[in-house]
Length: 414
Ligand code: ADP
Figure 1 (tube, rainbow, N blue to C red):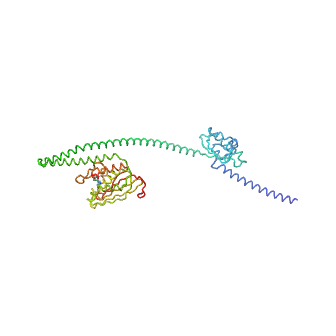
Figure 2: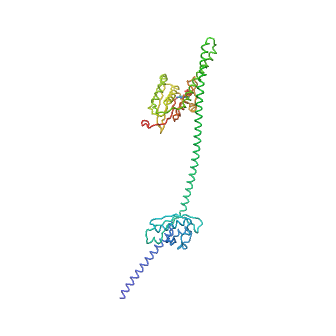
Figure 3: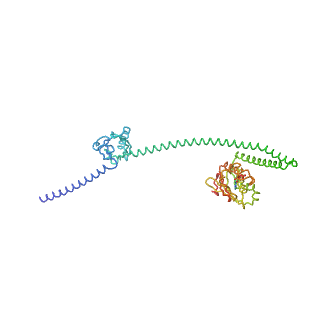
């Protein structure tokens, strides 16, 4: 019996020892979790149903700027800014009724000088046994995020303000531009009318000078000395040139009155231009090569004139073995046409000059002409919504380019 009791006691002692070891292990584990709980980067608070703090980690106490011991059993509301108290109470109410994650943003002040924004997240209703009596809530300081958001909003507002201002400025500038364009169009029209009337009215007196000079020359053939007869010849040729200039000015001014545009097959237009130049081409023994051409929208007469003037110049300002090539390519929504020759070429320093009315690079004895051909070409391309320009090398030849808008998608040229 004594022996039995002895064994029993030893067993009890062993069990006791085991239990003590287990308790020590549990305490160590609890301490570990308590440290984790206290020093987590997120604040943790356990609220009772009335919103009093039951448990709080050191991080959360730090956010409230209070000693932890003084917080246990105290209500949370005094730390909430007045206008957010309703939000906090509503958060608690939702935790009582709903399930899942409930998140609310509120601002805290209480015993600290500055206001800070926090995000409260409570997992509600996950385990009724635990969560109906208290709510485990994570609390994160989101002041920095809020500040960044406010700054971003400020920058966005500033940007919007600037965009609005800039839009206003642009609108004003556009209105000014439209006004100027209107004025310019009006004055252009007036100038065109003036040029037309002036050149029209000049025609008659010039015709009279030319015919009376001719009459005088023939009627007093024998009576006049050599010198006055030469003077009369000068008067006649001067009047003839003035008549030619007036005619061309009239033609230039008349271009302004744009007729109704139609779809034009440029192949046909070019054919007409080449027919008009047939004699000149044969005289100069020129080789003219043409690419297939597209259809565009425009005035067929004016477009024929455009090709004719450019090809005529290539023939006029030629060198030996005249070779002219007309080609086209598409660049997005524009056709780019090229009239390329192997003529005398143009000094690029006169690039601006040659498209102006009556501006020439050669005397009339060197090459015939009045200097209006390219001005007409420029006006025609612009009336058709295009541009004209050139490239050249003296002694090697010139390429004149002009663009016209694409009207329809033609796969052959796409
Ligand atoms: P015009 O031929 O009557 O002088 P244009 O306006 O057609 O008038 O041409 C203006 C000037 O541009 C010409 O005087 C000429 O010097 C130069 N030019 C035009 N086309 C060519 C060309 N293909 N090759 C060389 N020079 C040219």
